[in-house]
Amino acid sequence: MKQVKKIAIIGGTHGNELTGVHLIQKFKMAPHLVKRESFETLVMHSNEKAIQACRRYIEKDLNRCFSIKGLADLSQNSYEDLLAKALNQKLGPKGSSTPNMDFIVDLHSTTSNMGLSVIIDNENELTWQVVAYLQQKMPQVKIFKWHGDTEETSFLHTVAPNGFAIEVGAVPQGVLRADLFFETEKLLSHLLDFFELLNCGKLKKFTETVEVYSNKCLVDFPRDKEGNITAMVHPDLQDTHYQMVQKGDPLFLSFEGEPIVYEQEETVYAVFVNEAAYYEKGFAMCLSRKERVALPS
Amino acid sequence: MKQVKKIAIIGGTHGNELTGVHLIQKFKMAPHLVKRESFETLVMHSNEKAIQACRRYIEKDLNRCFSIKGLADLSQNSYEDLLAKALNQKLGPKGSSTPNMDFIVDLHSTTSNMGLSVIIDNENELTWQVVAYLQQKMPQVKIFKWHGDTEETSFLHTVAPNGFAIEVGAVPQGVLRADLFFETEKLLSHLLDFFELLNCGKLKKFTETVEVYSNKCLVDFPRDKEGNITAMVHPDLQDTHYQMVQKGDPLFLSFEGEPIVYEQEETVYAVFVNEAAYYEKGFAMCLSRKERVALPS
Image (cartoon, rainbow over all chains, first blue to last red; front, side):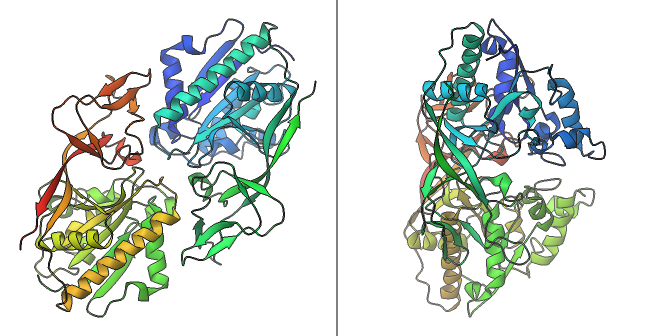
């Protein structure tokens, strides 16, 4: 694996996800916390205007603005589309062989009880090695694999050749939780240590397997003809953490009190259950497969 | 006590508090749920524009726009100030001897773990009788008394001679929880039953005592000179429900991990702990006194 010379820790890509916003603030005041000898660490807020407004975004979800196509298209000119183009210039550019950042970690939080989760969307060797290291240091860390064509994924961190998002929860939008704040800080500290070990040739490469939850499908709320939701997440799923769902298990409870069950044969695991920001995106949860992935030896 | 002929159940005064928004929707589709023989029940959304945007408000907190002074002042002309004037016309007018509504209940939710709480701001006989009845039917209901001059309080429900707000939590902004949805519905059903019994002369008047948490003071987050918060709600208080706080108990944990403790002698109880919408209002919690109030016999 190549050495990593410049990494960026980003917070406030969604302005109402305060864990990342305040961790970045803390690191700016105390840069020694993110300093390691063998590489540079940039810490920054990505969407100051949304942070000021304490809203996810001003006009459009920034973390869906980083597709190769969108970055090149000047007719995509919402506030966040333009911000994405500027961030791509600073942190990427995406697809470059000489990018400004080698690795980007983007800090998110969720109203879903996802604990400490790393959301990956590529299968680079570096990604696998990092997540294996993080899970070894903090066994509670879960790995969720978001499917999509790597080049065309539109997440912020994809402007660097490597990176991922961290999701912590459950925490409401606009709220800080001290427990999750400090756990996220610890996870970041391990991440920085990983790069230091890698650069110094001291990393013992992982060859075991890693447990990954791999997204199978998104499930929307039941809705009426006008698109209004007609049911809520079922209490048996609410607050759960990567819970197993089998045929016949309830997914929703209608406003009249009728359960709506999972009807497929395949056993799945529910992730991103009842995330506030996904009501408008049209899904209530992700159903995923639990897999053990063998790392290349 | 006088008969009650017209009551209003309001949701969506804060557009991102979905419990009330969807309960109103449900009642509109199934009006028999709120129908009683002896009075009329109006169900309505108060801030449709904020509901559409899934935001607390468009320009200004609607639930602070109903002071007598503000309602009369045309220079207070934000979107919500004008909306308040229109709602006052429809539901009040405030202070009138012949108001359009005799009682208003306004449905709110909170990111604080307040369970089912009734927020009262007056000591009318009717208010006391209602809350005593509700607590008898659902003993988990807590009563929180918000201090302020009755006429000058600026909550929506004050445009009627009687009323209160219901706060349910913990639930994030923009999220529905099935458990709290159905509990709130049950509470409202008991409320309607109360008025039916009252009007039919079948109400057995309560003469016992009622447990009330009476607001003593608001406590802001610790802040630096620029006004940025420097600490979070302490994990020992996070998620608690009307928790007792004594001298030396931690209230906050700084971003550096230092606890900040409660230093006064008086034992208090923490309410509205870590409510998202109160970060901008400048308080992290209410400290209250637990009192037993004797009802007039």
